[in-house]
Structure formats: structure tokens, C-alpha cells
Amino acid sequence: MSDKKSDDMLPMSSGHGNGVANGRTSGANKQPFPSFTPAQAKTDALKGLGLSMASLDNSRGASVFAYCLSSMSMTIVNKYVVSGSNWNMNLLYLAVQSIVGTLAIIMCKQAGMVKDLGPFDSQKAKTWFPIALLLVAMIYTGNKALQYLSVPVYTIFKNLTIIVIAYGEVLWFGSSLTPLTLVSFIMMVFSSVVAAWADAKSASTAAAITTMNLGYGWMGINVFCAAMYALSMRKIIKKTGFNNWEVMYYNNLLTIPVLIVSSLLVEDWSSTNLNSNFPANSRYSMCMGMVYSGLGAIFISYSTAWCIRATSSTTYAMVGALNKLPVAILGIIFFAAPVTFGSVSAIILGFVSGIVYTVAKLQKGKEKPQSALPLTNKR
Image (cartoon, rainbow, N blue to C red; front, side, top):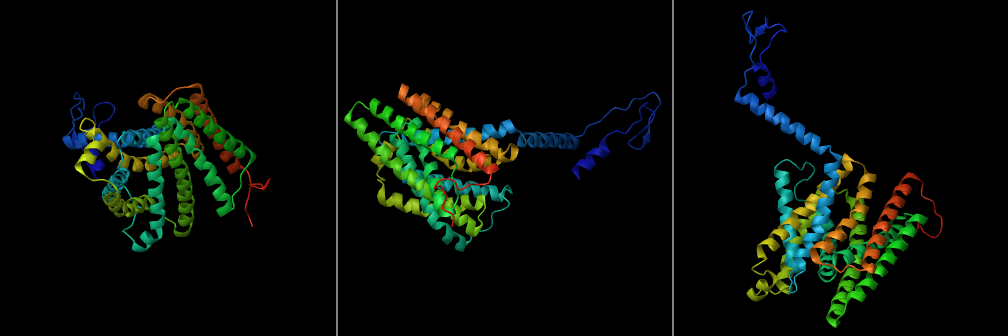
């Protein structure tokens, strides 16, 4: 209606100036002069904004940039929050993430941005609750590993999760692995060994070695928890048909009471410990980082869907593989991770292994799976 109203206000003229303007005959020597009203200006501005947003929504570069920014910033922000020498409030951190994420989803739904999220369903909540607990375990152990390990080492070892998930899919879903996939797995394991070797060489004190071993212990648990979460989530989604917004909503909502109660029971809420975890000189930035991490989870989900829609699943997969290198580099820049021949070699090996794995997946998607070698579990 507003567009039609604006059009009626525009002068209508012939090519020679002797036409009709707003239903009245103009003089022979008078040229039509366009008149603009506030309503028309507002409508034109909205049209321009709509065209700009549509152009941005279809922009391949913008979607790739958004996905890279969201995934890289989440790792860096998490490392910043948990890297304090006295940090021990991980459950509180996860509770804040869940609260912020839940509020963000509810606000998006109220604003009409989310169309496929229904009201709270207790039966769905009961079905999804074990998956939400696995998510808590995955994020908690990941934050603990990130607390003790450098960002490059953490990023390299995170590749091992891919291997566990792949073999879990062979056992649970009867999928198959190609020879090129096995090559990428060997490269991932080798890059992790090189990273651990370089890390051990840079650890010059007993305290540093203890910290390193703690990090590897938490990393091993995180790999198992992350694989269990991914495999269990896939199995439940196949049965229930949960959409992406429902997964995010129930993941965040169901973990809030668990995390708050666990934090109150396990963690030290004394003023001394809180001041130690949130020093006065960095308290504001840490709190902002915690809030951002909650919003970042929603941003990653949205940017993932945006990237796939604006480009293709192939581009998205390659961007995900290439994204590990800048994350490792940012970890070196912001957190002064040691730069040695071993650490650089491990980063490059991990980077290349991710590309090889992505290429293997893309090739497998184009071909029919073949049961060569004992790589399948089909019955």
C-alpha cells in the first residue's frame, strides 16, 4: 500500500512537457517539476534498505566472511576468558552462555525472525535432555583443554574428533570410509604427534609439563565427549526430526538449571574467588566476552546456514578446512604461543590434513560408496 501511495504522488508527464501532471493540464512552456514528500522519501529509503539487505543476503563474500569471523572469534574469546591463571568458574561460564543463547533465541522468535520453533514441549525436552548433558560435557572439557593448551595445539588435536566420529558412523550408521579419508586420518594423527613433541620441547619446567599433561588429558576426554555428542545427536534427530532452531533452543534451555546448580554446588562462590577469577582490570572485558560467546553460538549457526545458502556445501566445507590456519595464527598472535619448527610444521600438517579430508568427503558424495577394505559395518 505504501508503494502505491508514493507512486500516486509522482508527476506524470509526456516527453515534451505538454502532458498531464497530477490530473491537471500544465502550460506549454512549463516543465514538470518532481515534488517529493516525507512519505515518499521514507518509502524510497526503505526500498533502498531492502535492496541492500537482499544484496547482502545473497553475497558470497559476506557469508563466507561472517562464517569465518564467527568461528574464529568464538575460539579466541573462549581462550581469553578461560586463560587466567586463577580461572576456575567454567560451569558459571557455561551457564551464562546458555542463558544468553536462550534469551537470544526467544527474542528472535518474538521478532518474527524464527518461524520453525514451536512452544516448549515437555516430551521433546525429555527426549533431548541426555543430548544436552553431552553438550555440557563437550563444552566443559573443551574449555578445560583450552585453559591449559595453546590455541594452535588445541586446534590441531581437535581434528582427532573427526576420526572418532567417522568410525562411530561406521559402527552406528553403516557408513564407509575411502582410502583418501584414511590418508587424511594418518596426517591428522601425525600432525598431533608433531604438535605434542613440539609442545614437550618448549616445556622447560616441571610446572609447565604438568600443565601440558592436564591439557592433553582434558583434550582426550573432550574428543570422546564431542564424538558422542555428534553421534547421539544425529541418531536422535533421525528419530525425532528436530530442526536446527529446536536443537539450539533445547540445548541452551535444558542446560541452564543443570549448570547453575552444578556451579553453586561445586565451584567457589566466595568474594575472594570471584575477585580472583574476575580481576578489576579485566572484569568488564571478561563479562562482555562471556555474553558474546553465548550470542556467538547463535551467530555460528546462522552464518553456517547463510554460507551454505549463498555459496554451496562444497565451498562451506573448504572454508571450514581452511579456517583452521588463521585460528592457529591468531592464537600465536594474541596469546604468544611458542613459534618453533615443530609447532609450525604441526599447524601446516593439520591444515593440509583438513583439506585432504574435505576433498575425500566431496569425492565420496559424488560416488557410490564401495565396501573396499574392512571399513564398513553394513549388514
